[in-house]
Image (tube, rainbow, N blue to C red; front, side, top):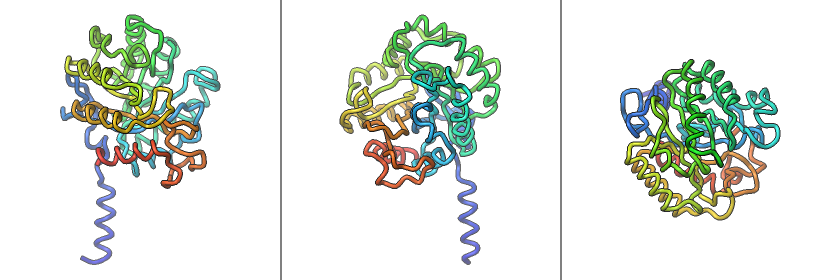
Length: 315
């Protein structure tokens, strides 16, 4: 085969590479399992960006391309901050300047993208209005996943169910199909309370559990496994390998126990976070470029572990 033919073959191969969305299409919930449009089990694995109002520099096309093309993330989580200064409630236009390129580049790259209402307190009306606009704009794309409430802290599951029903209704007025994720009480730990009383009359809704492996060990794995085996659809939309503070030493052994169980149960998982703070859970050093092309010398140990794990499972 001549050189020109080889080059053309290479171009065709790259052009025809099967992206996650081409592979799975419109996601759906089948019992406790996330599935593709043909009913095949799906496990999404990816990276969460840090709070948009703390690390806006990573909310760009280049960072998304790096995570999808070089780290093989099949899902990107855009964490729109509803706390701390310059948050969405205080500065919605800035928030959308950050969120829009991430959402739209993920769609272009053919990966799934989580639009995350990154809150610890309940703002029902504001959340319903936001997700109404997002579903009207992006509901036609199978890439989009809506995360209604990042980590409730003090809210009861009874009040959270009412919140979820209101926001789900706002989304479903525009988007009848795309996956919705809902948080559970106590920093997304009390998945057992959700399993005992899931939201009724809704479809394609999953419930989020978060873990930090050096803090949350076998007891929480057992709780998650019991919920899933009891029929609850669970999605781990935020996880990491250190303490719940986001700092302290990595516990690789416990992190791998979580990965093994999630793979066994076919649960999707997203790692926290693409940021550059002086803490263990930030994947990059401050001198890392905002737009990708991150060399090993600017990727911190947690970032390297995440990249290695994604490359292992998202082949």
